[in-house]
Image 1: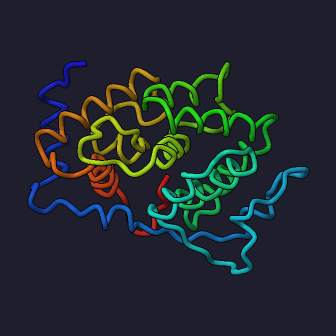
Image 2: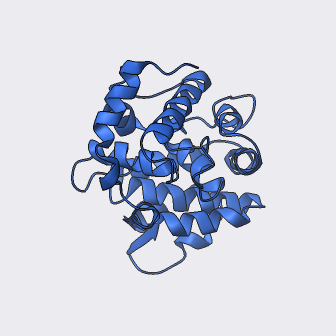
Image 3: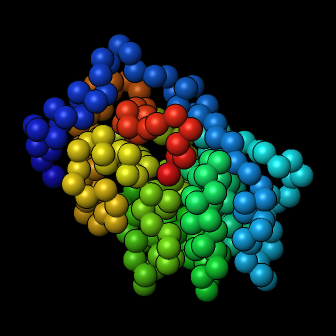
Length: 232
């Protein structure tokens, strides 16, 4: 898709000076605190509690760097659920509401199987293929698991992006959409997600081609984030 000059101009203004771009250490070091009991008290009956929640401390934390590491070894349904909880713990942070929303998809029939199916595509296929898989009920779509949540799964399951990987799957949520001045701030189609990656690819070329594209996502997100707001 041809990126419009207007969309490019808006995004470049939000990103600011290329010389002031954050480092990958800053992006991958982004760490969020979450509360274990907000997951365990809503946990589905019959589903084993993942090892990620087996620690006894009430307040825990996880970073982007750690989530990339966890995404390297998702080969079973149990590992897929644990990875999901880790990613959504980072996304929901200390928000009880967002944590409740993150638990809800796990109550759906076949959720572990669908998570594993989608994560396998995310780790081996293109970003658009991964999005389409998680966005299609005939494939790995799970009720209550929307793009703001599953694009985080795509991003971490695909591994750490490099500067040459200009179409790495990236997180797309309401704050990113608002920073870009999109009218639609949720429920994006696969085509709209592809348009987002097109825009990021164009921004990367114009702004900081020496950095991974998640620096762009991180900067757009933080442009509209209020203090202590969750990452979803």
